[in-house]
Length: 395
Image (cartoon, rainbow, N blue to C red):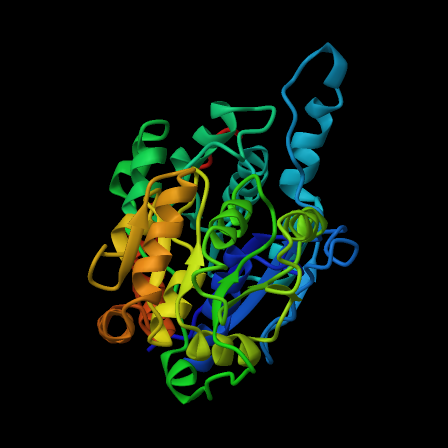
């Protein structure tokens, strides 16, 4: 098979987050399959300050560049007239494309204002571009709004990590109606080989970037507070870092739970696999806008049932009563009740964990995810060869 040169674009690759992990895994698997892969990312300058830096997989390198957020043309931003052609031909991303010479570009960017920059650079270089959407809300809208999003009309293909993600963007971008559904993948072999973490006390586990705008970890702390007297031997461990780590610590102290809740900080992948394997259950309630949280797949791969919010792509993965339990948004009492039910029923936990693990092993291995991307890339390249290049105006 023809070796591909794949350029992956992402934001904040140096920071903890599911999108960065998906890109990391995809780059690793494509490289393992013999392809040449480059990762280009913007830099999250607050990752170290907020305690949510991450380390990429061995063998995956990243080049950090500024990918221009295009501004609307106005009397205040007349420089946009000059910056559009500059970034199309001579901007940092355009120069990298020219020097590295990829066959295809796969953007995992979420900021809509960056899409015109990427599409203009790809058109100038005659490169097909695939856009992957990871969320199911408008958090990336920016200054250009839907005009920025519509730059993707010229994308070779659209990918969504869940049906919820596809359906959200299909309302705004007709091309997204035909999106390929390719969720993130997990290293199933490593998950199965991990040794369960052994601690002095049994524990519930949560893991994410600690950003309460999107992750309702504060609700989990409150739900756990309602259970501590009934389950005095069980602790709650929260792995990850982020801007709201301090707020969560204060919430635990206010609930007099600082001895029962431990904020672990950012852990390595190996440490996380052990923590998943040793947990009684995994819980991460979310706020609207989730695509398909990778941590759910990681927990299920370890054979650990999941308690999650019935929002976004979670309902496509968590089958309530089979491999976990779904609760309503912002429902602290419902969250506590779901956790209580699982803590009281060890046999049900084990059965749910086994069903979830079997589902992930069959459908969500990282190698399977990468193979689907490779098939899509080759399809886009075939179409490119069959159609003559036609230069179009920048969005």
